[in-house]
Length: 207
Image 1 (cartoon, helix red, strand yellow):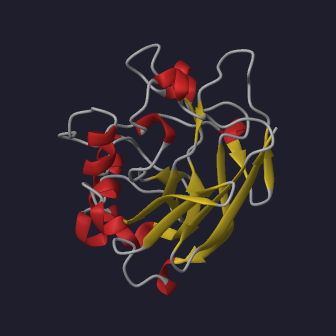
Image 2 (cartoon, helix red, strand yellow):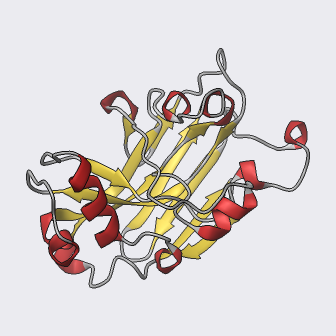
């Protein structure tokens, strides 16, 4: 989902959402720790990182109450919602800029839900080529994990193994306060490390 941190919405000039803005990333986008993302430079050149908490579902579920929401999860992982910003903003729907091959790396592990006492209070960080870019906490989310699960399952049936990215905090390239053409977008040779407290570090290279 998008815009789940007020400060991220503010940095890119988006309104605070009244409901979770959903978009899709398909199976072709899945990637893993130490994976390589081949940037589709034939269709865009504005590539960006978004470290996010990922929820992994354990069971088929529909219309889950907030009070029961965490019980339907297998666990949690670190994710990077890699985005092609030019494609993302061609229309009002983000999917085209979100689901290129390899654009949904998660890892390094799936951490069982019983090992994470409170997914709504986890420190989250991102480094690009060793430089700290994002430093926040999931306690800053507008819609917490229980609210997201309730909302999504009120709309659709979720299957075992489905994953939900929960949004990114401020610090993305798109939010930099310089002219768009002066921003240093991701390119071949870059490395991004995404870290969430208790869930490990996800390392990705770009080519």
